[in-house]
Image (cartoon, rainbow, N blue to C red):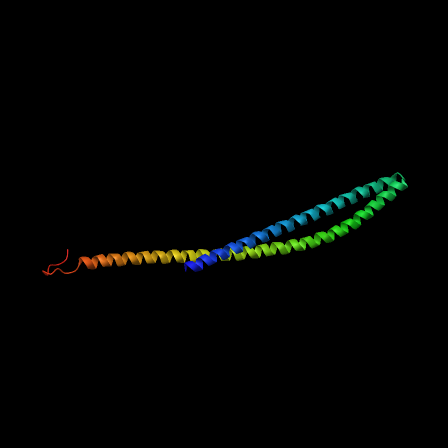
Amino acid sequence: MRDRLKGLQRLLKVYEGIEGMRESEAHRANGEVRVAEMAVGQQQEIAREATGAERESRAEAERLGWFDATASLQMSAVKEARLNHVLQERARAGDIANRRHRDSRVWSEKMKTLVEGVQSDVVRQDEQRLQSLAEEGHLFRLQRGRRPKRDGATPR
């Protein structure tokens, strides 16, 4: 039983290592999602600024400013579309990493529960063994003390 416990404890360490690795992957993937979200937000801000510049240029009849703002707005839209695609891919990868981490955590918890159960069995067996030894010792002392004397007297 003790050998089984030692093997399970080693296996538990492996499960915990895998869980730690999966947790790191999930943190990294979620960080990449946040970076992509910030990049999309920056492009949206650039697009708002370009829209404002375009309106001002139109109001002032400034053709070069309008052309520059329009080009900036179009470039921003293209970049935002690309970044949204990247964001979607990273979000999918983040979801997969989170799911893998959650699954490894469940397996690690199951393994921990199994090890705890085996540990309690080992403790219970040790207690039973000690109790049995104590009872045998007590019985031995009783039997040794109850041997009838040769003169036929009763034991103490």
